[in-house]
Every structure is written in structure tokens, then in C-alpha cells.
Length: 186
Image 1 (tube, rainbow, N blue to C red):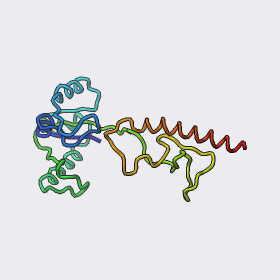
Image 2: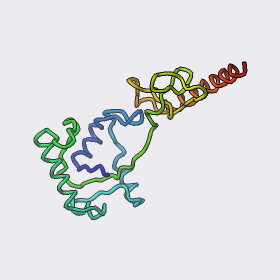
Image 3: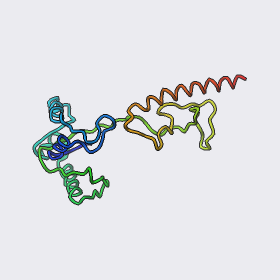
Image 4: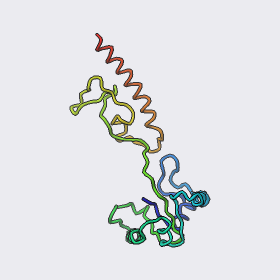
């Protein structure tokens, strides 16, 4: 997918700052004062993930995408921005901007994973628990494979939080396993 924006939005990001924080790395209202230099550097490297053009037609050619599809998508976005209602994705209107003023920019977005959520339910000893909530003897789950770490406490501002849990859940599981093996010997 691509993030596509126009010169008006670029000026907003540079002069006023971004609206939505990007974890702990870029907080809301940060002015992207180095945007032009950094974007131009990436354009010159020509690695195929940033694009800039004076017209939308030229942008689609540079990106190698179907011009009619991109035009339809941008037209739809502009209608939603004008009517202040996104009928497809229900996007928050505070972040929906028209794409009308060249030059136009595109950034290829790549899927990434900060960590995983979900996994096997566990108890305080890192033992896997069954659907009835009972521990499964001798089965331990740690790190991102263990469910229940976040629930209502997930905080994107805590980069590396899963690493601390992985380390300590591994320690707790090892201690619990040793206790279990000692108990089994008796």
C-alpha cells in the first residue's frame, strides 16, 4: 500500500507538525523540519519506496500503478474530506485531508511487527492453562507466545516492552519448571 499526500499536507507536517504520534519515536506535533532533505535523499537513492511528481499522472507512472485506480481512490478521498465523512473506512475527520495540490508524494508502506499479542493463556507461573483455566502440567509458555501480557495496559510508547517480558517470563518459567521437576521426583 502507499501513503499519498500533497504539497498542502507536506507543508502542514513541516510547519505545524504531525497529528498522530508514531510510538515513542515521533511524538504528536513534531515538526518534520528535515522532511525535504530526507525525502530528496531517498528519491536520489531510487530504491522504489518514495515518489514525488508534479501531477498525479506522473506519480502513477513513477509508482508503476494503474492511474485509473489511483485517481478513483484520490477522488473518493477528496469527496470524503469535503463532506467530512469517510463512508468506507470511517476515518477520523481530524486526519482526513484532500489530495489536490502538486507536487504529490507517495511512500510505499511495508508491513512490520513490533511484537505479537495473543497467544496461549498462562498463569502467574507461565504455565499454559486449558479452556477451564487449569494449568497443563509441565507446559510453559513465555515471551510473545504467551497471551495476556497487555489486555487493557498496552502502551505503544513502551518500545521494547515485549523484550522485558520475554526475559522475565523465561526466568519465571524456568524457576517454575525446576519446582515442577523437583516436585515430580518426590
